[in-house]
Length: 299
Image (cartoon, rainbow, N blue to C red):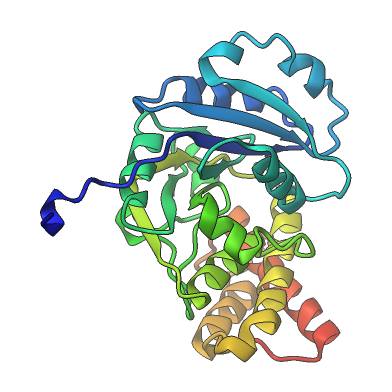
């Protein structure tokens, strides 16, 4: 049989796994998006509950989309954190292809078709995200995103954004799933481990997810702190495998932006959006905190 005649690899069943912690009512918008998929193959949706106290179990029981989505509720509260919820959901999923999305976003109608199409040639797939659909124009300016076709490159290896990633089960099991000790950077870590293991990560610009951003400075700051801490934790974990320090120019850019362009100081010139400044300041603070804790310098 010629190479061109080899049939494309297709999953028998896709399992879409959503880690959830007090995700109502936004979760229903994600479920509506999943119900509108143009994918022609079978798929199931698992709600992996990481200790919600908002009545999630009762909400899912008898949910109107249960039959359409093959919707299942999974109790995943033994360990706090989305990584455990993802891993436990994956362990109980029936599919041979595992797709991960978040509770407060919304997949575009062609998302799953694009993920599966790209996955035919790779061990895992990253999808694209956009910030215009679910956010106000002001909030969307807080978090510039790469163009859909650019994926998510880093100074080391590319990664799949945590709210839009897919893995063949064999690959996911081979690398041991998500690292449950990480509360930031777990998506970068699993993507890097996959590639360090000799497996291939592809990217689909058409597997698009609408990303809901934090809308307050306090929530943005907390999220950014986790990003910064996680960046150092992941670097420490992967430096023996060849991960370099973050280039100093990236750190210098953050320092200049945080010090010279603080929008909360009226006399500052060339002020950036407050949410974007908060993001950069939080990431920088988190990196400093984790760097001191690990006694390491990360760019």
